[in-house]
Length: 493
Image 1 (cartoon, helix red, strand yellow):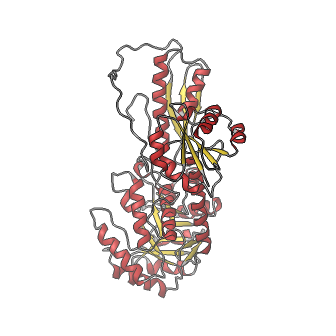
Image 2 (cartoon, helix red, strand yellow):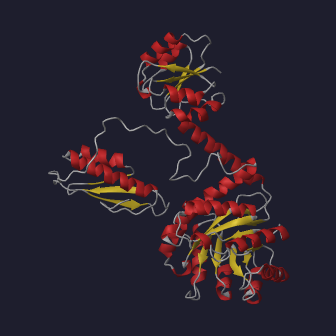
Image 3 (spheres, helix red, strand yellow):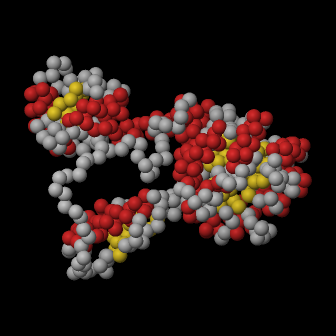
């Protein structure tokens, strides 16, 4: 396929460097590539006098307009390339196998294509997996994706409406298993009600999280799919309930967390007739033996490859004042290498909010990495939220630049003040609405642009400096929603 890349004079060097010998370059008689018109393209094409037939012309991704007549005149397809020239090297290898769009920039189109290809591979791998154990219809181990368990802390003591909202939120964020936590203050009957509510609400597997034998019995009788946990302190009293049911059990070591203790408790569970066993060698926090615990996981999986492994990621993320995204991804990668089948997180603290979704994506990345026998890179999925995979080109400082200074004068807009805040989406855990409140109207929208456009349309802003101020604040509010941060008007983001 013979491809021609159309651009303007200012971007010529960048385009030629990105393209190399993969395509020819056409320079239109215009400085800024995004302003190429059908007429300018036709004029430059004929002036170029290309010796070979061109099959495809790629325009800059930000070009607007109808190029269908130009396509007829030139006898070739005209489609949108990427928004930025530096992405041409990524886009061009797909030219033979993907039909580029007349309206969607190639970089966006291919991002969706690669993501769908990635999800298709994940679905196929999940269907082909031969699990070590199934839990309420989901596969654990045997090539299946690591499943994410979200703990609702103190679930047994929540009122039904609050518990229902938490369950719905965890499922919306991607939890594969719902873990209902019971505390030392949980009263008889509360565990039964919590499990019953969860089982009525969702088909997602449900776990009862307690060492109390009576609460374990309540949870099992209410239909819990999993008991978390059994060890030497409750094996004799609670183990028979589990053995007589279809429930699985997470077995943990006794205090001291030794591998020998874990093995001894697993053998005790087997002797009681418990068939579905999941082992938790216990992941320790940073500063309290995390390296030793990872080695313990590795040793256990080598000794008992037939037993699914529980990996308590939340033990680390909850006890670090570090953004969870990278920590969750790194721990997920370690979990994959030590044979983990379940990734556990409570999303208890504010700083750990979003961990379910992060672990879900990370588990998909690790599965793809295993399928492709590669590092978790260039998969079609990623957890890049702040840093960039490819940096846009920088431009030098102009000559005779004027130093910017904040204005000292401030005047109230005659149209009236506007108060801004955000209403987060508590179910999904990300996104929500930006709210701008004026005495005459309240405007709510998902982006700074649509809120600002509506304020202007309603004539609620009359001064340029007020419009500039609102633009800054609305953009901060949008970023707060995007990164699941809190927002306060006039405060530093």
